[in-house]
Length: 351
Image (cartoon, rainbow, N blue to C red; front, side, top):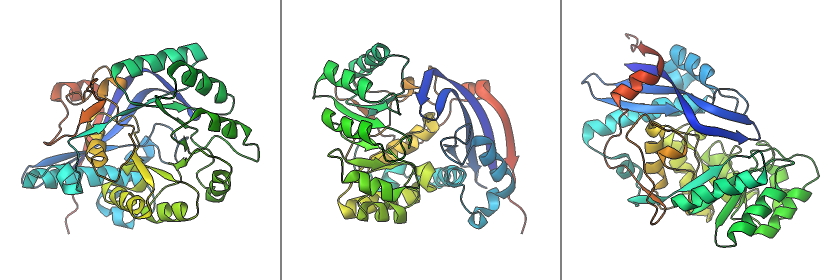
């Protein structure tokens, strides 16, 4: 049996990117319930609107309501598929007493956490936000950039914190055309990487841009499978890959993308999608794999939510790490009931 549950969680503060401003998460959770009563949880990464990706939460919900038991016949819809895969796998691993980290081949007990900071209303507010996150213990900061909000804020942060801060930027594909002057100007700030500067279908453009920049290009939205990752790296379109299970269709394919990066000597890290604790447990286990060489977007629960669905994941300020779960992570029943908007169960069709 599968349960499709929609929950709504407000963010602690609005999060602005090139695709708009998010103030709350409309989340689709999937619960898989085995015949023996063992259950597992998965979280769909699809956003509320089809602006960042063609998938969106209402569409994922409708697809799973209709095709949950026949996903092998469905083209596309990786985020919906990933949620079901995560729930079913979680149930299977609970039945055998196996931790997800162990199943994936993870080697770390703790992972270094990075934090993503959205575009601010002014540079001073941005610098203040970075101060708060650095004071909390985050070792790597990612700034959202877009045309008109790029060189000035990055320069201000670099001036304030010096070269010691691990700093990177994410454009979410917002730059286009031949004018790459702003991206070339970012070369002067010693960034770890520039993430997804051009549109997701422009591998050739990224390969050309890479020859004009000293800063490594990282691809995110462009990487939809291990095959695409291999092609992008081989074509010189990127030297770094952001791996998101939802974007590539699940943990199995995310592990294959990780392996491609290891084989080709590319850096890799685990990206985030404003996950609740259900999804955060999954990406923490993935981030424990040895081929993830850079801090990922695996921030603590309180980066996004005043109260998480699960017991909170906490950042250790001493070393900027978060513990990888070694036992199943469940939503808190009272919290789950409080934020649930709808819930329905899907029985497996009789053969």
